[in-house]
Structures are given as C-alpha cells and as structure tokens.
Image 1 (tube, rainbow, N blue to C red):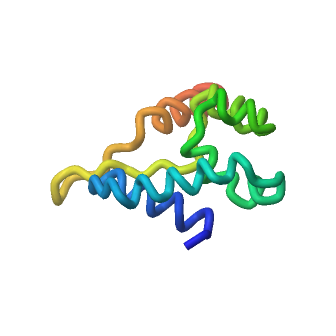
Image 2: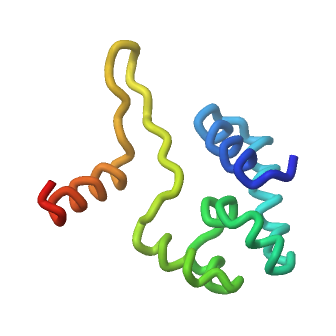
Image 3: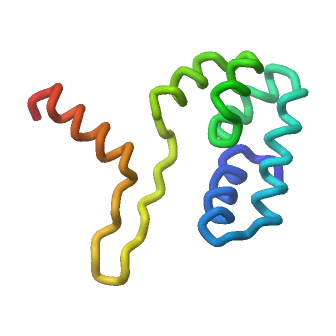
Length: 107
C-alpha cells in the first residue's frame, strides 16, 4: 500500500501493538522517499514528518516541516485509552498547546 495517510495510521497501529515487521516496512518506505523527487515527498509529507528526524527533514528540503517538528507540533495525536469507563488521556503536547491557546485567547 502506498497511501500516505494509510501508512501513517498503520504505523501508529503497529507501534501501539508492537508489530515490528509492519513498523519496519513503513519506515523503510519513508527512507525510500528520501531519494524521490519533490512531488513524491509532497505526496507523503505526513509520513516523512512522522518518521524523519528534524535533521533529515532539513537536509531533504523540508525546512518548514523541520521547524514545526522543532516546535513539537503534532498533526496526529491518538489518545491513550484508559481502562473501560474512564476518559482517554490526551497527548501531553496537545494538552499543553490547548492550555496555552486558552490562556492567550482568554477563553
């Protein structure tokens, strides 16, 4: 499968459920994209954002994504599920961002 969103979601699933072969296959796909043209990188921007380091992003012409990653920005935040009957725990970074936004807007 070579769909950016599907690969990102599959990587998250594989990471959560310790599916090492799946994680490896998707990370290898992300590595292959390093040698691809700009159009291919653009089509897979979310996958490379999730997998590549800040340095790899910068070195491959993805400076804007590297800057976002440096700020701790997350496009995908899957809540951590607590045992049945309890609310999900939000990702720490997203909770901090929401708190900062609320404070800055006075909401």
